[in-house]
Image 1 (cartoon, rainbow, N blue to C red):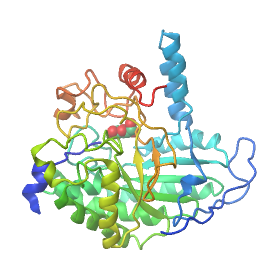
Image 2 (image 1 turned 180 degrees about the vertical axis):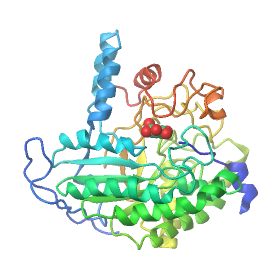
Image 3 (image 1 turned 120 degrees about the horizontal axis):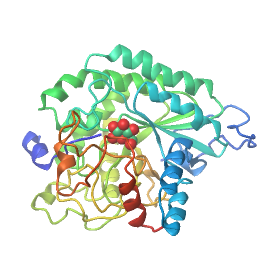
Length: 395
Ligand code: BGC
């Protein structure tokens, strides 16, 4: 990841139904998924029937991390994290292979969370997560990445999957359209996201399109263009039945319901009514409904346990002092919010603080960013221990 959020930029640019039963209650198979094909009804909240799977990839990271902790009480707490459901990021073509072991210990009560994250020219407004595919490599994205993932999901019809589609991509086209890099990426993002939505629209899949967070598309002037950008991807994909809505706060830091909101004292807070994610889900939800797109949400609460750490709302890299947040649950208290989920695997870095690295982004060198930090996606033991110690609720 990541994005430049933008109060200033945004301003300058100026710019239910009753839940029906989800089919899944099949007897559990030893070491397997369900006994028969899973059909997810995306007009309902599937998180009421399924639990986000604690995947083996993150489990292995946690077990290694716990083994490296000498304080036995802290090590025991670390191991508790291994049992918490977390999304698995398919961030390169090669890492699609990680799916295999994640599938091996699925049960019929579980839903496997996957992040689709490999667009050409990825992370156009930042450097930390620039990807393997260059602008223009859209055919490769379609055939070697999306089609390859789709083939695995099809080959596992008895398994339920929840997908977060391409974090930061469309939001960047809304607020960072002035950057040459985002201009260059725009056509590929639009085509790629629509292709992913269309191709991954399978009966055993529910999809959520990334919508940034309240400090990004939540600015009053960004809500409508944001909703229109997302809705246009949905329509271009042929209005896929398995798209349930949006993912918000992915790898983010915003509180779900802090009132009046972490940045409400900022002079420009008057231009943003989405001061927490609950408000954001409500406001973007209304804008999405007007734009004709399904508007339910899942919200990443993996690292939002502590507030008041960021010097600016747009600071996104390895925020220092952070703590694990609310555990995954469908009990959100909001009809529009299907679930709190952990999307960013806490402990994996947002970006390197090594100023000489090609993917060094200045946000990772800010005063409120934890240092030293390794390359995006790689493990940062000290950061993990900090998240654990500052967890809220505590472990
Ligand atoms: C990185 C990915 C990584 C993901 C989850 C992103 O910021 O670019 O490589 O898989 O975070 O940690």
